[in-house]
Image (cartoon, rainbow, N blue to C red; front, side, top):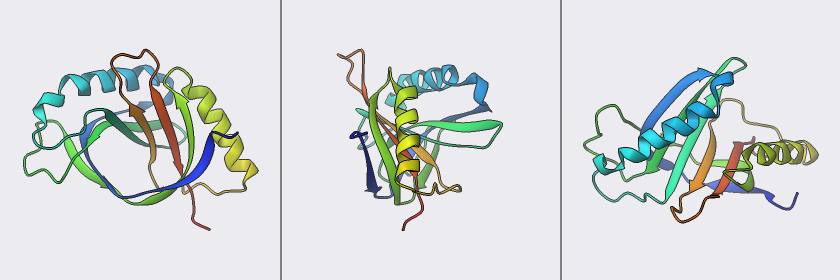
Length: 150
């Protein structure tokens, strides 16, 4: 599992849209949400890095809330229907994979977390980071699960 590691990510200010629903509706709803958000990227004014899509998410045993966001400096004007928030600095267990192999990436990451005897930080959001390249069918993705700091 050489594609798994511990990383500390700085605080991240983002703007985006969300979907909340049962786990049975994923990943289809997540893909639809990301597509809808990408179609609205022109509405976000200012310095926006549109080659990296952040998808913070949080769930329980029944449903999840999933976001599609771009990193932004603090915006004075947030487009209608979008929300701006900050994900605090966290230490994560991270796995690298592609958008076609996310399931495998999570299996590897979960096994690695257990092998390393790490504890998930239950009240913190997890992240999926998509590196968008319109010329590629398979995009690089980082899967990040927040962990308790040792």
